[in-house]
Image 1: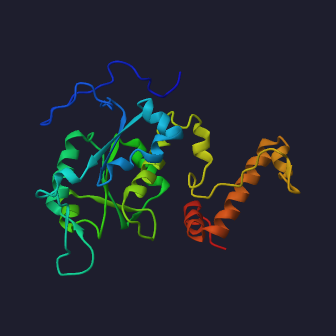
Image 2 (image 1 turned 45 degrees about the vertical axis):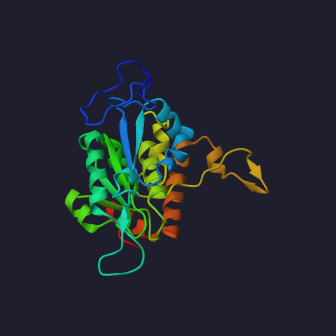
Image 3 (image 1 turned 30 degrees about the horizontal axis):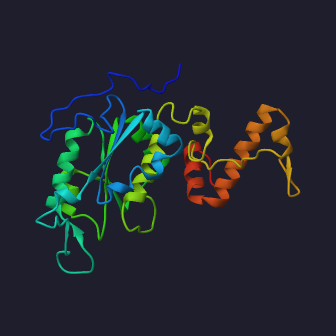
Amino acid sequence: MSDTPARSHGRKTLRPTLRPRELMEPDPELARAWTAQVITLLPGAFPGILGESLTGKALRDGVWQLRPIDLRPFGEGRHRNVDDTPAGGGAGMVLRPDVMGRAIETAQETAPQGAPLIYLSPRGRPFTQDIARDLARRPGVTLICGRFEGLDERVIEHFGITELSLGDYVLTGGEIAAQAVLDAAVRLLPGVLGNDASVEEESFSHGLLEHPQFTRPAEWEGKRIPDVLLSGHHGEIAKWRQQEAERMTRERRPDLWETWLRRAGKASG
């Protein structure tokens, strides 16, 4: 029997809310589904690529659900302003704390208990496979997509928000980063990939980059698949893959290599 929950009656869950719900929702709230909420000025950007391939199928099957929360309606005044000039001067605009605070409070009304609140920020902790695994074990996540020069620091402190970064570069907003974080977590949910072994063998699962992969034809442009992979000797194949994973990590990611050596209790050579 598949671990993937099947769509059926009785999956809806009811919550008290100050806002009336439509009698027929296009995306009804599903009980027990992993829940992602995204606070954004660009709700039309979602699900985006998440609606395709395996994550899209899992979304349609109710394995997980996505709630984009439009920040604009929480804005101030007739024009629904969401930002203002930086205190102390400087270029750009900063997202207002009162506006974002109202959006977060609304998101918390429907966030599952235990779902973390995360702000995608260049100054955040680097996002890793370990963090993706941790998110997949939780009931869901609420992500905040920054824009302009960022978010008023008081909001981050008040709500105890965790900051995550995809890398040492700056994007125009957090939407692309949010989709990357969700993709990394959703693919780890039971039944999404359909092959748990592939998750165990891929890059970062054991602290190393993944070994090289090959498929048919056996020879292409004068280059052959390594003989050991065609030998049928599973022990030798596993040994080759481990050696290649170590080689590629040592050559391409010395930072990961040093960490792996420390975890394995080996001296650096």
